Amino acid sequence: MTEIILTQYPGRFIGPVAKLIGYIMNALYTFLDSAFGVQNIALCIILFTVIIYILMFPLTYKQQKFSRLSQEMSPEINAIREKYKNKKDQVSIQKMNEETQMVYEKYGVSTMGSCVQLLINFPILLAMYQVIRNIPAYVSSVKDIYTPLVEKIMGVSGYQDTMTEFLKESGVGLVKLNFESGTTTVNSIIDVLYALPGQGWELLKDSFAGLTDIISSTEASVIHMNNFFGINIANSPMNLIKSGWGDKNFLLIFAALLIPLISYGSQVLNIKLMPNASTGAAGGDNDAMARQMKTMNTVMPLFSLFMVFSVPVGLGIYWISGSVIRCIQQLVLNRYMKNLDLEVIIEKNKEKVKKKKEKQGIYESQIANAARMNTRKISEPVSTAEKESKIREREEYSRSARKGSLLEKANMVKEFNERNNK
Image (cartoon, rainbow, N blue to C red):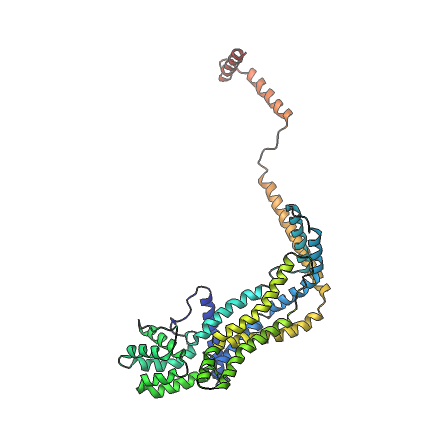
């Protein structure tokens, strides 16, 4: 990648994640091409998904262990909630929280244990959407397929007006041509070409009649690159259904419908395989969490069903691949967790908590010692008897003052004031 692709998503957080995914996808594309002679973005997406979920497997394992331990500790948590059920004062609430935290520490469970994977998955999904909707902007090997054609187009006299008119006729939405500079123009035209529907290539041949051969070869390369069982992954299922209906291509319509339906089915299966932490009947936060999880388990598959209809098929492939891999991982983990010795894990967690408490005790002792050292110079409290003794010493010293000294004169002034006050 020798230049900045101006069509990349500019977001401060998702932008860099999308760029990193682009580098990985480009490496996968280059590997498949050099090792097997395969140039296919769909395979790159599937391989990328496998790599991501293998890397996240330790988090998945921790999440499953969290769920299994939550089931085991649930009776203790519910007993604590029942104990403080009718106590709403601040002290009781604080004690309940402390006792609850002690149970969490005993089982080695973090309250954030089930959220980490979602916090990682969601940004990747958003970034993946940006990459798939404009592959050439992130995968330089794909951009290279379009570059020779774009250079030929830019060599045609008056190509700016021709491309502007072509954009109106091709039916490409949400893409704007930009002719500010050479690099910007190349990127802008590639954006248009990548978003072309099937009939758009024929219109391009009509607009640039002298470039028919290179347009045809580029179209063939793009179709091969984006093809997944006869579906163009750059298009959305909705657009494919419309195109198939217009051409009476019912096989294309069926294939386009399969993508969101498989996405929905794989999500439902994934949820069915997931172990659900028991929440008991004590009420409170656990019941609220159970309701939220139930709602999410209903909404997420429906969300994937409707979302995959309107986004590029490539994102649906990523979504389905992730669900299938999670199902496989879940089957393995369910079998492993079934034979897991929780008593051993709990004992290990107790040892960890004990060592942690010991370290905290040492640290607190060090703070106390430091505090005592820093306060040595502060005067100790003086008793009443010591104060009276010091006053008498000062009075005796005053009476023993030499004649003519300042101390004698000060005593004379003091006596004069005392007689007048009387």
